[in-house]
Every structure is written in C-alpha cells, then in structure tokens.
Image (cartoon, rainbow, N blue to C red; front, side):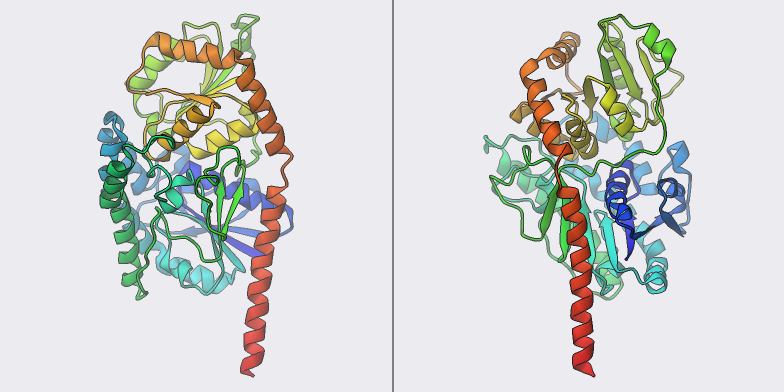
Length: 441
C-alpha cells in the first residue's frame, strides 16, 4: 500500500516518523514524505520518496536554519532564561500563530498531493494538523512523539509540561489551570482557525493535538507508562520507542580515545538543538565535565561560537544517535522523548536537564522511577553534576534494571503488531467502502 507521512519539521518529530516509516518500508509498502524545502533529503537518504511543499521562505536544515516556527523558538531567549515551567506555558502563543500561517501556505498543495497520489494511509506527527488531512476521507493516524501526559491532559495525572510528580498533587490544579488558559487555548484556537478557514467544523479535544479517530501511536516503554494510573483510550497503540535506524557510519576519533585514561567511561551529551543556542550555559557545563577523567561524545547542535571542545571531548554538529548510544555508558540529555526512549532501548542511565515542554515530564518520570537523575540546568553546583555522573556510572542496581529493560524492549514484538494494525485499518476501510459501493449499485 501507499503511505503518506507529514511530520512537523523538527528533529524529534521527523525522527519518530522515520522510525514508523522504516517499520512499514520493511513490509514492502511505498513510503512518501510531504515536506518543505527546509528538510529536503532528510528522508530520501533512508530510501523514501519526497514530495516538496513550497513556502515563501525555505532555508536549509543542513545549516540548522529551520522554518519560521522553529526559528522563533531559537530566537526566543526568554524561553531559555525563564526557569519555571509554569511561566513557560504563555510563551508559545506566537509559535502556533506562525505555524498556522505556514499551514495556510501549503494546504492547497497538500490537497493536490492527496488527490494525485491517492494514498491508502496518512501518518502525521504534528501539533496543528492539516484540515485537508483530517477531512480527506482517507484513514489518518497520529504519531504522538511527546511524553504521553500531553496526549489528553487527564485529571488523574500531572498536567502536561509541568514536570510535577505523580505522587504529589498539591500543585496539579495550579499548573493545569495555567496550561488550559494558555498553551491549550493557543493550540485549540489556531487549529479551529484553520478548520473554519477551509470551511470545516471546529474540533474539541483536551490534549495538545487533535487525536485520530483511527489510531494514535505513542512511544513510551511499558515500565514508564502511566497506564496503571490512567489507561489510554482503546484507539491508542503504544510501542516502546520509535527508534529509527541510522544509515550513516559513525566512528569515534582515535586521537580522542588515545587521550583518555584506561579506566575512563564514555558519556554521550545531547541537549537538543534549541538548548544548544545557550552558549554561556553549555560552556559552563562542558568546562565542569572537562575536569573529570571520563570521555564525552558531544552532539553540538548549534553550539559553535568558535569554542573548542576540551581534550576529553569529541563531537560534531549532528551525530547518528542510534549508532552512538550502544558505545557509551551514560547519557546526559535535555529529556526529549526520542533520546529518552532510545537511551532506554540501549540500557543507558541518564542525567536529564530539561529546558521546556515534555522534557520536564520525562525528566521527572525517570527520576521518580529510578532510571535516571533530574538536574536543573539553570541551578546546579559543580560537585552536584560530577557526583551524579559518578553515581549513575557505577550504580550496579540501576544499571542492572536498565539492562533488563533494554533486553525486554529489544525483544518486543510491538513494532510488528503495529505494522499489522496499520495494514488492518487500511484493509477494513477498503472493505467497508467496497460494501458501501455495492449497496449503492
């Protein structure tokens, strides 16, 4: 069958879509990505077709210049200076206004693609979803690549993007009210602006994106999921991780390895594209770690500024993460959903330093379940960071638990079940249409 993917053009959403596309590609299905010029080639290198949507401004992702929506986040210095997740809810209003305008530029082109290609199935990983896709009459599936808390904003769970614990509800209502007043209002109002603009009925939903009536896929290991507290709806399907496989080769620089002490451990640092613009914060962080005996592989993102990495570090702007993770002993991350679940897939303990959105929720979940440590990137002491590095590297109990979790994830058949579910949706949809057509004869 022919499957059309339409992801939000940021690394986390794109990588999750690639992970699902790889599952279906292996089963012989045709994969097409509808994308803008910003990310041309990012899917073709995995063997997928690309159809380009044209916008007014189309800078190149290879230089880390993304669309206006992401650029706004990158230039929003307040987002990375403000420490309290509560105050960050209100900073997203402009983001969704910009994103709605981007959709207006490409919507008629997307409609033509749907008419020309006639896909059997559409998979989207977006916050604001194309009205043309929702109303296309083609089964569409939501790939939800965020922490599952924000899928539906359930009162039995902490509010989305709060980083609040599951066992202390004292601040839940305060944060939930603010989430509803700001972030959720911005999302819903812009989604419904788009629906009305193209002549469709408005939507109502409680999470951060419209759920699919067909199937909603989310990536989170069973051991961390919130299902025991609040089970997900029946039309949701959980896989442990989207975990795409990288095609590019990765080798650790031999000169870097020669500089390390014989008993050094290897640690992977990935703080995300958005956080990497805080040069002052990153420099402080790296200089502290340069005093340890361990070696560090650094995914630099935009972090450049002429700063030379310390001698016990090696890195590049972008690294093939799923090739790096098997080689390291510890991960220091911002807490993006892909990095978290992929690190667990390879059994790596984590220090999580969240900056915004569901990074707070992931950091809190791993901390409270004992799979990692949460550290405030705005407020920590040198000895605190170093102590957490040493503890997680050599805590045998945590590392054994992670080894068991990794083994369970790597032997799971959920990815195969997902592919069969998607095929079943298409087959049942075609069967019901055939039956309806026969009844109309």
